[in-house]
Image (cartoon, rainbow, N blue to C red; front, side):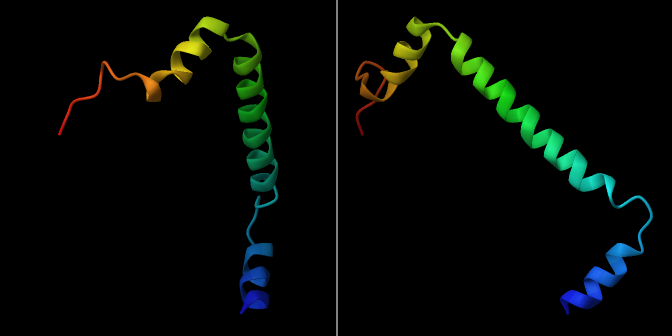
Length: 61
């Protein structure tokens, strides 16, 4: 079954660009994520990290 699919995929024109595009998207996403983490303010990180522990915003059931 895999040989059948592989044979048809190899015959598609321009298919070799898709792995390159997916690698670039993956790489760019993580570079932007690392940039955001290292440039974010400590106050914002502290505020967001305390949200689950904040009892003021929780409603009682």
